[in-house]
Image (tube, rainbow, N blue to C red; front, top):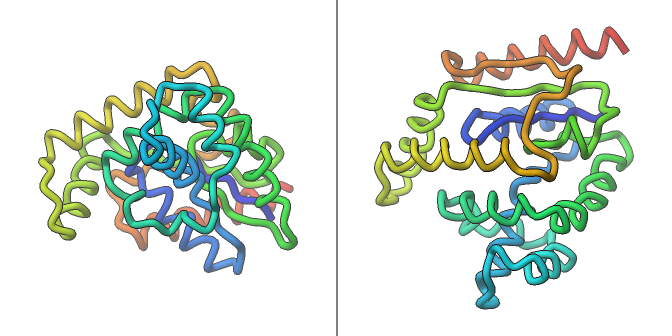
Amino acid sequence: MIIAIDGPAASGKGTLAKRIAAHFGLAWLDTGLLYRAVARDVLAAGGDLEDVQAATAAAKSVNADSLDDSALRGPRAGDAASIVAKIPEVRAALLEYQRAFARQAGGAVLDGRDIGTVVCPDAPVKIFVTASDEARAMRRFLEHQSRGDSITYDELLADIRKRDARDRGRSAAPMHAADDAVHLDTTALDADQAFAAALRLIELASNKC
């Protein structure tokens, strides 16, 4: 079973994907962390995020064991990731890693921006998770507030809208729902409600296979 979960930042797709993976006993990959790690490594080497050669080299040598780095979870890491993610050579370098992860025995759950459209276009289950800009910004604000981060709601709202525009407008694998994806709007749903709704969608999709 391969379950592809896509959607914009703070839509709840990561939390949902992790929970779905645990429910079905599948491996889970937050593909956004790969791009965050690439951006981190470029900056750590003193490089420019817009430098195609530096970003591609970082993508080819990204260490999957470093994806649990807490620094990859911050808002600035996400913004940096969306800059390197628009580079076609970076996406190509990370594509086979993601596909190999999906092909492992038993299957996997992957979440990102282009899982259902590019990484795993033949996945039997595709879910595109959305939520309003305001709801997503508030979720991020509460998350960072709980960690004591100094960032405002307005800053997060602006960041989310900027990232959405960049992700949708890039030439390489722009973010959009696959034609055969089912949509899940989590604006008015808590984590448990979103999980229950996703399980229903997965059951319906599985029955069609």
